[in-house]
Amino acid sequence: MKDHSNDDELAHRIARPLRASERADATFEARAMSAVYAAAREELVRNAARPWWIRSRTVRITPLATLALAAGLAVMVLGAASLLNIRSPTSAVAARADTVHVVRFVLVNSAAKRVALVGNFNQWQKNTTLLHGTGTAGVWTVDVPLQTGRHEYAFIVYDQNGEHWIADPFADQVRDDFGTESSVISVGATGAEEPGAGRGRAGTTAS
Amino acid sequence: MADKAVAKGMRDASTSDPQPASGSPSNVHEFSDGAIVGQILGGDVDAYAYLVRRYQDSYFRFATRMLGNRDDADDALQSAFVRAFRKLAECRDPNRFGAWLYQIVINECRTFALRRDRRERRMVREEGELAELPSDPLVNDSSELPGVQRALDQLDSDQREAFILKYVEEMSYEEMSRFTGASVSALKMRVKRACDRLRRMLDQTWSLS
Image 1 (cartoon, rainbow over the protein chains, first blue to last red):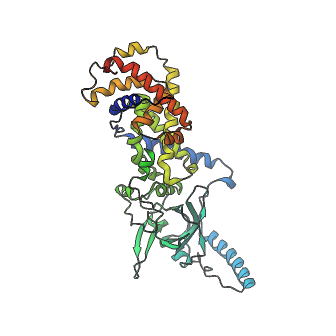
Image 2: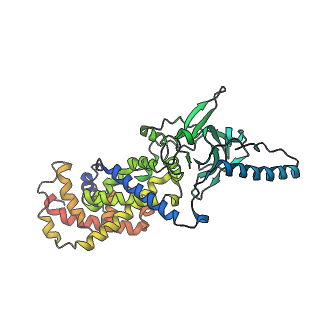
Image 3: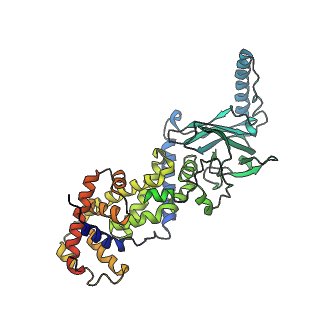
């Protein structure tokens, strides 16, 4: 195929007016989001129609169930600890729970080889709560049962350059006495954490 | 274009230097597509509005040129955004959401044009269209646009798409190939044929030599 420079000039001449910017209608975003919300609702309905064992998890644990679960876990942990001669650092979690909410923590980091969640709810232990890949490159999540109230947390990302402390870029931040930044999530009774309710709570959702 | 849009000033939240987030919509520019996609996949549907706002205008131009009018472009783009939302978990590289969305927009415009063409078979021949082209279209760009758009509308959709991607969106043939799935040689042929037809249509009115 011959390359005609005249064709190229003509093409540029024709394209010039076509390059004029076009702005979508002022209502476009609202209409698009309305359609998106409808799609999300359809997905919820479809999801609800699935058998429970393949549904997305939305778990709310009552105090009684929490105590039963904690007791069961304690038996397992103590059993394992006695076998391995170790002490569990988190055995007392949930003992004072009113209601426990399952909060999904999400971090996007394409360089990470491993991601851990640390917070006051796991005594800032970096080997206790690991995020897992979702199948979508770079997206890491973990669901954590949290008591009603305010919690501080951060992610620890392990990549080829070592380990990095990362506050959730979408959540409110606090700084400790040493200048280290962590993130804050308010769960349950404060009403701050419901899916989609908080624009500033990008990394987490609670149920 | 999509790659440029994706790269344009979007801070990657995967870096180890996150900034405090106030949660206000204006702060969305602080976050990469990947970070926003992560938020949506975590259950925050509201966050999708940030992506709509980020891409609606740049992709609206492509849709308008492809479909020839704003109403159809609006419909096609709405449909593309909803489709992208439904398939968001399948986006392999959330940090390149814009490029992924662009492929969906291209496909949506193709489908839309196909359905419309089937519905409304064009009865007007090129000669008939020529009479409607502006007699002095080179006064300024805005006066040229309607005539050029009408000429563009007469092209086969694959030729029109190739011409727009090459000369309006100013992509390389390699980029075009990635977005359309067509080979570089096929795309060059489509652009060549598009130029030939546009030349024939505009020759008399534009005094092209």
